[in-house]
Image (cartoon, rainbow, N blue to C red):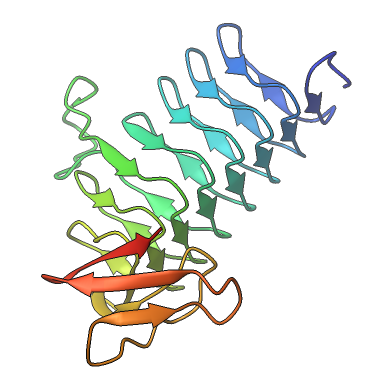
Length: 193
């Protein structure tokens, strides 16, 4: 179905009350639920569920088979890999209703989460962080950090273009693709302008 401002495949379901930004594309069998906010130029793949009150910034890319549950906020330029998983309750039970106890998860600008990764609720994925495929994130991830494994552990740092950063003895590194400069100080990385 062609909307004036965004594209929706004919098999997708868009509930009343959802806000969808200009230039966004929503593909096969996806379900956009009420009161969620989807920014401009997002790409929502096949079989994706965006639950009530979820907030997605601009240019968020969601691959196939991802469910984004209430309590999740993704800032601009976030990438969610195929079949990755969010949670929103720390102690789920089928017989106990906890719809008023959702725990928030924040994925900050430019972060990427790999295929089949699991993000335990209540954590923040920092700006431009990269979560490796299959990782299980049980604690917050620093900006520009590269984490892998179960439970996830940081194994390095990445640039805004997603390349491993190799810091010299003075704590500086250069991205091989963009030539952007970065500094490591007090176990934190920031881009040098």
